[in-house]
Length: 244
Image (tube, rainbow, N blue to C red; front, side, top):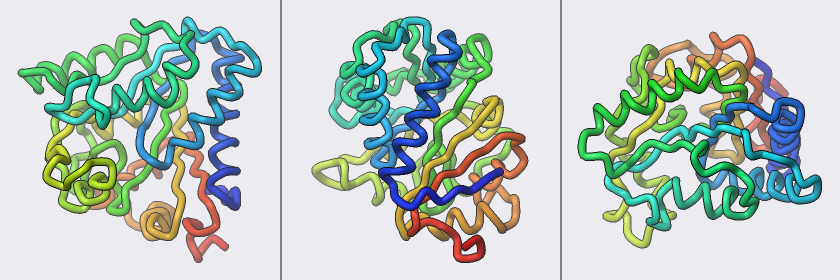
């Protein structure tokens, strides 16, 4: 696992966009694991600009998103399906819609939906590059503290801290979903390579623990220490003091 300080979120976002672009350029049948949230906005913007400038053929690229809110329709402005289309797929409309995969948050049987998604991930995978953010409490995807390391795609109850962090995207905190369908920690670890982005002072403690702390389900992201190919890119504010 390597932690690299690229100085600013802008630098890190562009660097990771270049990594994804070169993966798609060199391997046009790549399988990409994608993440959502505020951390990823600039990275996807840079990726769209690279794709447009170079007119890259992405018609054979397969994508899998980490998670989706339970009970939120795909066309809802705060669904992750909407996010991905608004920020990437609609802005570079050359991806094949049938190869863009997200959990179905409206599934009536979330256990069956979780199993379907995990099976599809195994069928199409392994993921070549999995993009991750990290929560202040160390969650990756929606795998909250205490999630077993052997977990596969499952329905999760969001913690209060995650609900509060996500409330900025909703008109009222009461509107924030309390559950989500998420890839499990084992699902994430199947990827060939993992890239994690973390920006800001509020992520510093999580990155510090990830760098030096105990590997424990109480800190879900700590499982990444046992993966053979993890790159973590941070800005100045998120860089652990112990690594300066």
